[in-house]
Image (cartoon, rainbow, N blue to C red; front, side, top):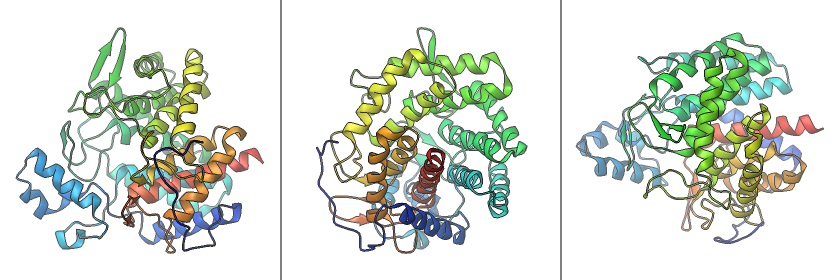
Length: 404
């Protein structure tokens, strides 16, 4: 793998992390212990506007809101208690935790995992966004981007689709019918409440019901959830809308196999984990027996991902042409995706896991947020870091057991 755009990092102060099988098991055990002690609740990189002080100080204006969010996100020290920001449940994080426990139950049929699954389903049910056509989830904070402002609990296609995938797999791995029933309802939110950008018979789902931005990873995540749901509801519209949505984003895949984040002049970057989300979504279509016409494009995308986002030692780059900031999302999504891709990517997957554990895990079990060129941001964000690594390590463990 090429090493453009970055340098190597120093070794971990915790030498028991070597990337070997038992160390991965130990890493997962320590992480699970931490998240259970915290009861799945925590801070988030983007929760600044939960502070009444920062909310008032931003005066309801776009750029002051962005400034507050970015300042809190980048600070390596936690000022949130001083700003009256409380730890909270994040629906997307809960969905990822649900997914992880479902995979653990598939591996070991332990009652304690079923109990966690039941508790997480209760929490997700209580945090559904109200007033929409079907089940859907947003974030537990207001957030402002350059594109639009989103009040807390406004549902997003990303949250609802990730949670939907987790619910489907929970049903598959545990037989929990409640999980499938919750997933079935998400279809109506996607098809009835989201806006669409049309393009010659294809379309792109909007990110939320209140915007019209065409974001490829969001669109593909929604499409991939629908194609998986089709086998359960047997509704031709579910399948046809999924294929039309997929076709939209496949038309925008670039010749080298990559995608820009979105179709706007200020969102034309190529980053690691959104590339992984795109490919994961296309892989779901292929696994369900669809979109054979896109297999070569998929392979080109996988090659681009593997060849451009990782240094020789497993360091995950943020962008295809730039390493920093090294963000925990990047190795986590890479592990999820490449774990499913077979022997060809086994060595790469293990290098990424070894690097992540060596460099990003604290001795208390949690994982750090980001490493910049100047410092390590060790904030133990619950949704952004712990939920994603839990999802990644349980996926790796499950896929490893399948291949044994």
